[in-house]
Length: 401
Image (cartoon, rainbow, N blue to C red):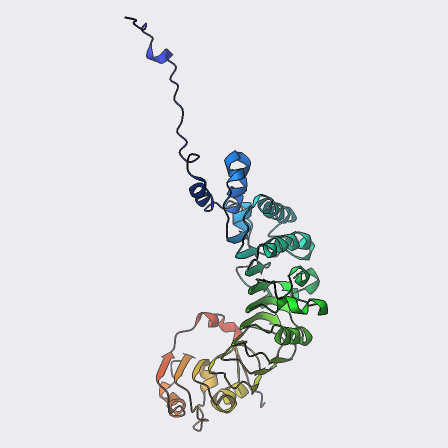
């Protein structure tokens, strides 16, 4: 019988191998866990782990922003100002996104979102990322290069310099019959369609444009060329004084105009339009050919007396089939409420958000109710909607003076 000599416990060598259960997981589960990593951590994991180089998740929705690429401890602000995000940070961001695409092995990308303060000087990088996503049949592109939490251009529209904005590369899109791109959001970009690229944006179903300049010729190419467009929003866009919306396509159903500046008159002609929403300071509307338009929301940020007369009289005449109407009004606009109001013969739902003074008599609105004989639902609120929080923007203009 062999007896092991007594060895003090302190001198014994204990050979314990750590159990790395994570690396023992099947590839499918391991890849699923990796999909929860941020872009920054995913790149690090691949550098540090051999297995991550071969088992990399197929992420269908790619989102690149300041914190996911540069890290959560980055102290820079979301802004386009050079004083807020340095040139070095922009270079690091571009390099980080490039690194990710170098290791990405997925064959499909449903959506690509880039939210960072980039401009035309970074076009070579952004073009490369878009081309990568297009080759993987992406259906949605979101490019937000303002990266502002507060809309700087809304207060300082002169800062919108087209030569500094990124030019969206229509040339990189495939021909219409092979393109999978259905949804496009551009913030602080230029959208310029060359004649030989006309057909490449035809498959788009939704187009969302924000913080850019749009002249009448560019607008005309959008309304006439995007034949399958169903939903269009223009927000904080610099428009010509008279802006004509001429959309012959039957597909465009929803049109939204928010805080567009420079425009004084809007003409709308869209045979398929069913929903129209407007927030801004325009002085007059003209609806020419909108036989299907049934739902309208209007908020004048200036209390033009002509606007008041139009809402209580002209609107009913221009839109005889209107069924849903939502208005944001101030007491200045409501005083005095006209006794004679054009009848809304098909109106079924009416929403009024009244920014009123303490002495305003809500019963004066009964004439508006009497003008809607088929009304089924009426909602009245004196709470200020979120979009009316900037009270300083509301001014009174008497055009008869």
